[in-house]
Length: 382
Picture 1 (cartoon, rainbow, N blue to C red):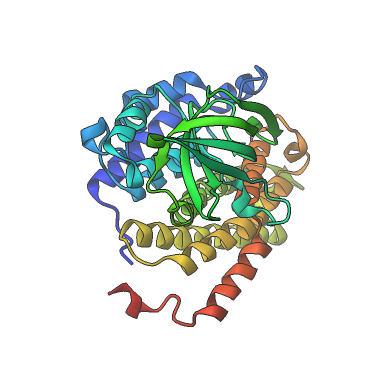
Picture 2 (cartoon, one colour):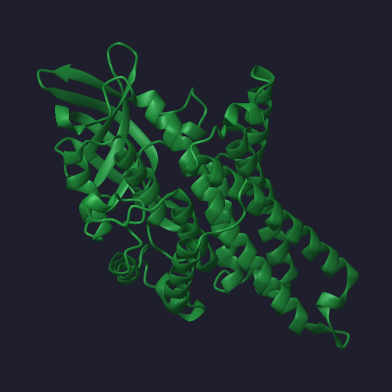
């Protein structure tokens, strides 16, 4: 694995850091949280102006044509400032699959305006982290040159504000096809779902939603492969965001415990506090290394099944331990829901839920190795 970032990658990370730091200050986030809004439109516009929304959009369609590592660096910086903007859903869940599997017409229709900040995208794939017995299903029936969708989807990230949604649906032959469904399609109804981060998810109901044949992403019946591909990239992107969230939470805690005094000395000098912070530091570094490995292998076109699962496990388990420790080490201040450290706790827990939870990842990682003892072998990389 190559641990070095290129000059361009460092420049992109620095630009994202500057944008998020200048806009998403603690004072701004506190005032913003009292408005009842979920997203900062001004921040979204700034990201578009600086070309960061088109980071993975091909140059021919108005983007910069860079790669997945650059995207993850932007998401890490977003996590570092817990900035309220729908980057993950639009750039990862919606943008990456269209860039990889879409036709030129689909890329022109959706990726060009995405890079300009004119549309938002998402994908209805939350069932990947659900038990199959309770996962909602959408069916697709061919009708001439069109398809008719019926069913429901739950916990769709930013489904209430997206202009288009990637929807996997089961066809009559039992295979899955992915459709690009416009948010204003007749027969599609949306109900906002509130999470710990606000009204940032939606449940969708499809009642006779008719979509044209050119709304199919990839080929009919290719949906399972597309969703499996998307799952790995989405998970690695969330892990990168978790690194930013937890590292900043720990940095703030180190500063706090170095200033907060009891018995005339900083509480950071107490052995119990120092050891708790040291454990959190180890967790952050484990999350960073596994996250980097996963995103690098994906960006380099290498097999990454086990690496993504390992990164997810650390992001879930380590993320929980870090933000639990950082909030605890803030003492009574940490229990104040308007104190900055609480936002990092909420973000880390929400990311953990989106990833499916640590125990689930450990079980799936074990099953992966049990089924194929060549997983992770260097021989598969050549």
